[in-house]
Image (cartoon, rainbow, N blue to C red; front, top):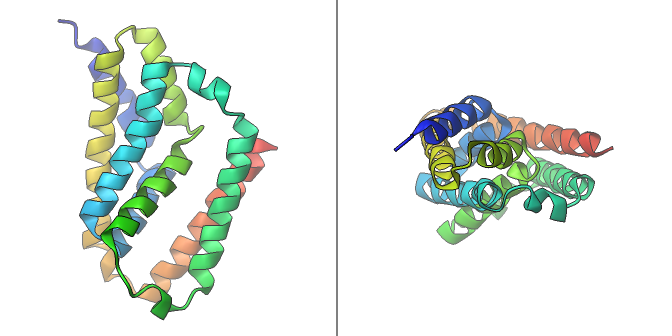
Length: 185
């Protein structure tokens, strides 16, 4: 069996996603929520967006107008950033792992729509003519990178002062939102 599609997809996605906005966001999420919820939410989001892109091919992007996805995602990220910046801490004290899981899934899902790795998943699947192996390579890369991000967020970023983490994460969400919107214009 030729494992080139698996290795090529793994290598390309791993290098493309390393240090990407979704990995940084995953670290931030893991610093505020249970690692297991963040990990599962993020992996399922990657599977939903990139996995479906690999399985369905170019049809996915043709169904979703890129400008609309970028504008909506940008607006949501700016809103999340502003909300995080201005909310009171006592509003956040109640923890529910289902909410953490859904929040992680939703945020990573929105970030991946139209992202370079989604496009790479489409192209790799079409070019390498082995959807199962390409999908396995893509998900292996995302699993390793998400695990690294969750561990870094849960272990190291939790040690940062809460106020600093709140400001940095808010600014990152706002910056990503502006970048999404500016990319759609």
